Length: 165
Image (cartoon, one colour):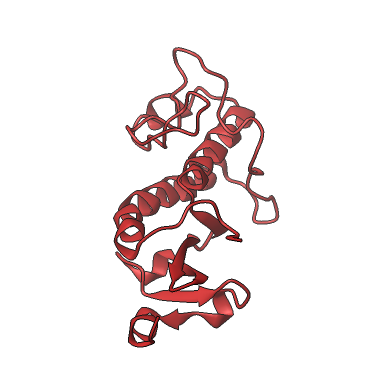
């Protein structure tokens, strides 16, 4: 039985990289703007992922990507600056959480927010594996790993495609 609900082809995952890079850049900027000390964790994922709706608060999930069924789409990383200064600290944390939740709603597994480390579930033959990406990898996915080895078990993509499926 598959561990993940959604699975990506390499092309589908690579097509999301510009959006993921943009969202993580925005999250990193917003966290810096909050001047959070390094020992304060980022907001937790889950309930209240999006700030309360108001005419002046941007929906952090509204740039035309499919939503998660709760009336929100995916992260709009452009309109945030227009109201950021007027939001309470709690609303800012919710906005950051909403941006991260938009990535999760796409079926991407966030492993490390600071590094922009994410995994894309995929299939290699009958084996469920993860296409592994971090911001330092550049504009496309270059590695993968099995479900149990994690980042330490990253292997180059060319090894994956050189092996028989």
